[in-house]
Image (cartoon, rainbow over the protein chains, first blue to last red):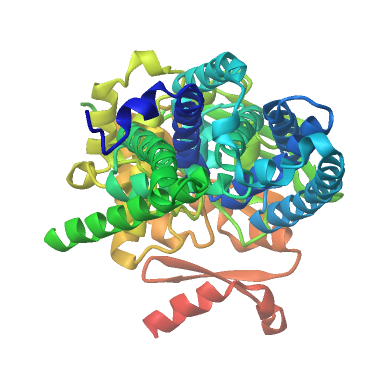
Amino acid sequence: MTDPLHLASFLHNSAVQTALWIGALAAILNGSMGIFTVLRQHSFAGHALGDGSSAGGAVAIFLGSAALWGFLGMAWLAALAMGALGLRRARERDLATGVVLGATLGISALFLYLDVSSTQASGATVEVMFGSIFALDPQLLWPTIILVGVAIALIVLLYRPLLLIAANPDLGRAAGLPVRRLELLYLLLLGTAAALSALSIGVILATALLLGPAASALRLTRRPWQSFLYAQGIALTAVLGGIYLAFMSYYWSGGASWPVSFFVVLLILLLYLASAALASRRRAKH
Amino acid sequence: MPAFSVSTDPVLEVSNLCVRLGGRQVLQDISFTLNKGSVSALIGENGAGKTTLLRSILGIQPWQKGSIRVLGKTVRGQLSQIGYVPQKIAFDPYLPLRTRDLVALGQTGRHWWQGSDTAAVADALAAVQAESFAEQRVGMLSGGQQQRAVIAHALARRPRLLLLDEPLANLDFASASRLVELLGVLARKQGISVLVTAHDMNPLLPILDHLVYLVGGRAAAGNVAEVVRSDVLNRLYGYPVEVLQHRGRLLILPKNPQQGLEIPCHVHEDLDEHD
């Protein structure tokens, strides 16, 4: 029996199965949080949470623990710091974010050096920076399911208030919403999304999964519910498709598979261009 | 629906309000009352304390002395009785909200499982005549349409008090007079008390019941004839001013031309238009 698409070996590979599950969960959460992030023009904060979490990943590897816990711990710490600063003006917020980002990258530089100079973690830099979705411990699957489940439940529950303060915080305040607390919750959810994205495709590329699908979805629909579903769909397509293409590249390139992150980011870009083309064609018709 | 006459039920009572912000006395001893179904204006220049006063009424800005009562109670817990339209509204073009969705978000205290009260949304859209753009994204609308969408958002909770911060700024003449007419209808037909901040009282004169004139954090309050008088304004400005009437418009000018620098430039523009 010939199987030119290698689907059977793809789906029966246990490393691939773990990658598909964790990748899908990361995609769903990042697609959803991306909508809020794009609307609030918080792209830089989202990027900083992803990049900054590299310090946590490097420390976790140094301590011999799974990188996920380091990514999460650092992203939550950074989210709390940003929430505590609570800077209202975009300029102040960007400057503070930049300073915090610099500090965390310094820590990750130190610990990545320490990781690499100790022999048992020589691949730490690539793992943290570009992800290692095929090398994930299957035991991480359940904690990831719980994390994403809680996060999605909170988004569904607080969808109206979160959307209103993203549209205009003053309207939220006038409606009696606890805007500061909601913003802190938003930052913690954003940190969770960034940590899972970092785990899947690496800290450097984490922003792409957060912003790309959301930006594409917002070009395609004007309905709030649809924008979330579209963003999740686009993120899922990119991550699952990227995992499959990386798996297949083993056969094309003669025994050396290319990085998953490359394919995921490539698909995000292609889907973004396609949605831009579709949106402008639709506009031309009207 | 019967037209409401201006009754004496106080919807908003501000007494002896003092607000200090960053070491500066922004509001000093402000007192006024808003009745049901009335239109009032908070007139003053930039930095006179208009926005601070609105934020205090909304309970966002703490104050040091005095009291604010909405329908006889403290503001806390009364927010669902207040609709608020902030100044300089400009929604992101990509915001995935149609006008209808924005209006539905204006209903306070509702959760995702409740859905929206479609009758209240339809009434609010009709009140501001926004049905024609109800299905369009709010970020794609013109400035005047976005403002009407936000007014509908504020009306969706069926408020007793509607606060609008500088609603006439950045509106062309036709949109501005249309908005003034709308505010008059909301007050007279629906019995909502409307409080509007503005630099210039003239566009509002046709519907104005009550005026709070702010200069440097101090205020004179009453109806137009009671407040816009040279003796009252002399005390407020601290130098002699005179009130001129020109084709139903009111102009406040300093008696001594050397103090003319303190008169807002739009007054001069108004003069030019009619010269």
